[in-house]
Image (cartoon, rainbow, N blue to C red; front, side):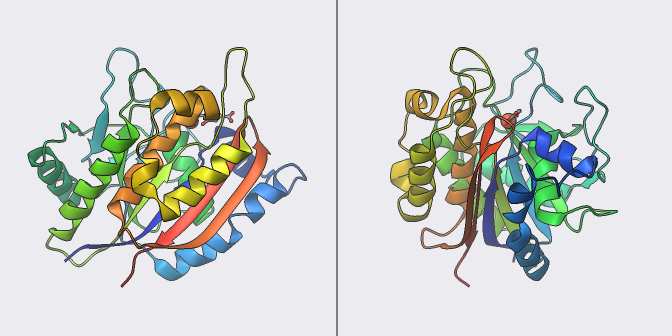
Length: 280
Ligand code: DHB
Ligand code: FE
């Protein structure tokens, strides 16, 4: 049977991707950011997933205001890096896992989550930057990836509680998949940031620290935070953090925090990163 072994959350800042692609990761500004992922790359090499269910948001690369799925699961064979205005990032094409993706689509839809099934989709920095941070620069990504896109761009995004419950439905779906696979679930985006308006540049270290603490110790309570609180405390783009609750819901309640990293600033964003292992 497939099993979820671990969960990872990380910010997905596009400038981090550019720093990697342009060979700037050793510059003084970026060095502390990348230093925070050294442990993670070693840990990832030791824990080699077969498949990553990568929860992220599209930033008007694959979708636009013409079509806004709340939850969309990528069932394709592969997903190309999106052109985000400066051309696609020079990273490998993402290989999917159609069989497991369709199984998750079936299981979650029958569990009353109205997933959108996507058979063609390009993937932007929301997905490719976490891949680069966790795997480094590689000629090919070392595992399959199932992209799970969540609308956190156009109001109304799903609630934290809905995301938490979707995570639990994904846990159930993976546990009933009849192949021996090491599956990880990643949640991306965040932490506090606001890109526009009078509060552009907002960072809230207290909120972020408490979010990380509660993600470990009280995820069910954390899932009750309403949208207004995210926007007020973590900025308009801080709402991306609801995606971390899908990851956490997919793990066992007593998953163990094995690593945490927090750094300000990177671009306009507080960088947050956390790794959980499920009990064996
Ligand atoms: C930035 C952060 C994001 O999450 C994003 O999607 C775009 C830009 C930033 O910090 O600049
Ligand atoms: Fe973003």
